[in-house]
Image (cartoon, rainbow, N blue to C red; front, side, top):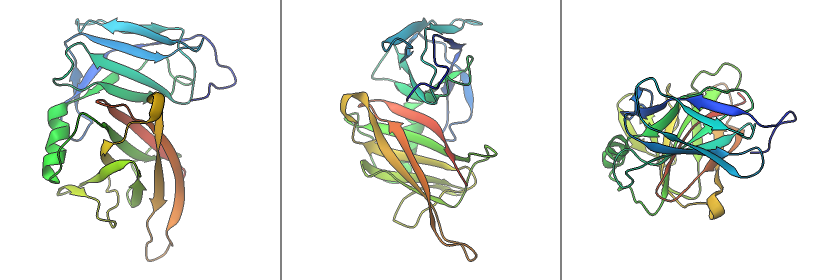
Length: 226
């Protein structure tokens, strides 16, 4: 969250997209209104309104340039679908990015698959774990978040609830369900470990801070130095 050495006033623009299934990859343009907010360069949030009109773009001005700026997209019709979504954006590297909204129906399908219920009293966190060097999804990782009720791992045959032995498949995708919201809109820590293989011992692979807000879902890609 700390601005980089050349931090200053900058802009961020693009469209708002709806992630329509539990791969969190397939997206279509969101056709309804939403409020967009990011951390500003002067220490105060900056915001704009997405109208959902064809060929329209949101435009945020005075955005803080940071390695991780948690940009919020809040649909005008809260309590329905899609969900209020936070997305990690590298505003020190990009000025154009399509922001994402997560489908509540898709998320609930994951909870149903592992016999859990999503609670609006908590936050939800969707994370893709990728190689910091190549950007490719990483399999063979165990990830934990102590403030989550459960971790749900994507597998080729469906979703599994972590029983202490689960690890990421080729998608590198994990959903943390019903996460205790962080105080004052802050973050919770995700710990990453490379599982043991016949040729390598298990090894720590770092930690990552994820924004967690009550009633909202967070989506981010985590760069793992492996």
